[in-house]
Length: 189
Image 1: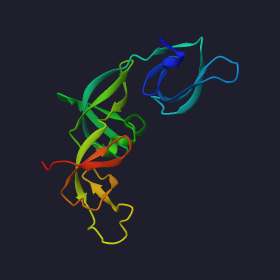
Image 2 (image 1 turned 90 degrees about the vertical axis):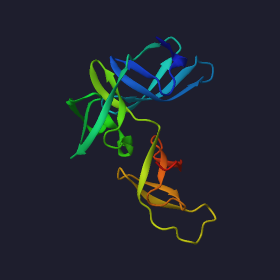
Image 3 (image 1 turned 180 degrees about the vertical axis):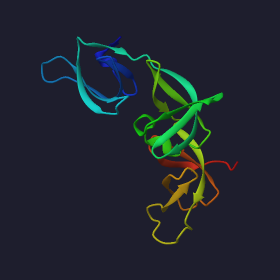
């Protein structure tokens, strides 16, 4: 059980029997009252974001989430298909809500961790940084680069990100999947 002040971002808690991820938490004291933890929670199954206050006397259970490795196969008409890591016949499909926006940085045949709650897959844990090959990069144009020039590049997964002017087609770049931003140029493979 977590005390009110242990409910921190990235924790997964059970609220009314449902799993919620803590997005934001702020403990404060209003005038002469007891401290309160004001949190912003995201329902892991529906994706709905709500705000909840936890008082000093309240305790909440940490959700029992397990993970298992799964292989991303392909995307077709808004459906994302996966299979068990070592058994291609054990296939299943996840919706847009379950996979999240970071799926655009995932290559087919990539192995990721699936979050399992109550024997059912409710989401994915995609690596924070991934290396992807640049498919399209417009040529660098000389001009106003006082603020550090950047250009839009298209990655092998079809995602577009802003990158520095020196990135060319065929380069391998490291992308932060949480922010959807270019991090650095990776070694060519």
